[in-house]
Image 1 (tube, rainbow, N blue to C red):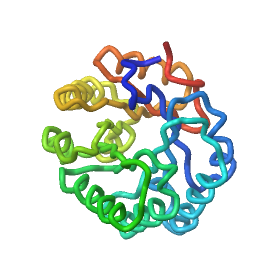
Image 2 (cartoon, rainbow, N blue to C red; image 1 turned 60 degrees about the vertical axis):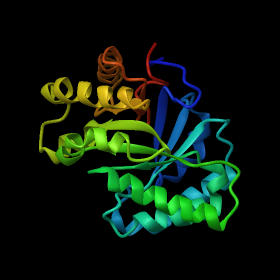
Image 3 (cartoon, rainbow, N blue to C red; image 1 turned 90 degrees about the vertical axis):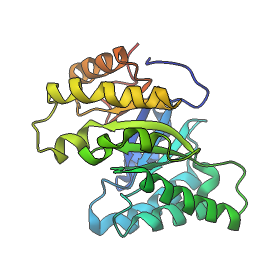
Image 4 (cartoon, helix red, strand yellow; image 1 turned 120 degrees about the vertical axis):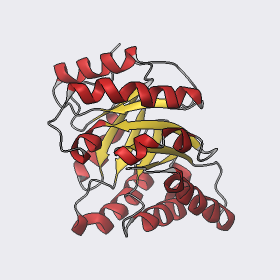
Length: 236
């Protein structure tokens, strides 16, 4: 498995689309250290239904002590604030982290932090919900240091290579992108005590293992695993 064994660091995180009921129901069977329930990649007509599905899945399923993240929609969309409010107010006891996609600057993280703080003042949660910041744009890359210091709740800095490839209109698995960007994110994360995680664009076993092994040599402590997973967990 990848990287260090920090108490709150997940070496592998299974990303589960919130609009696929079968995947939600079987998320607890994965040997991954964490589960990311993904609202961001759901098509627009299904956003509200998917949010309800996440609430229902968390209420009904046993994820076996894994870290649970809910990946909300980007904060510049009309769904983001309801993602945070509805999920945390209704089922926040079962949520460890909120993953914020396509973070372009520290204000994106701080917006979600503010919502969480207001919700916590209204209801009594037994724990503090932490944050993950995903970088998937040139804007985010240019402000890595500021993003890394945006909130005391921030635990993880994610290089979303899938999103960045799309933002730059590059061919999938562009080697030059990985070589240039991965060290920047890893250094920014380690400099501020965060876990660097890579979200790779690989769905085949061999390509996935190659990508994760390369990231580990740069100091990455974790990686996402798509559903269905190309491997059971990140490789040894």
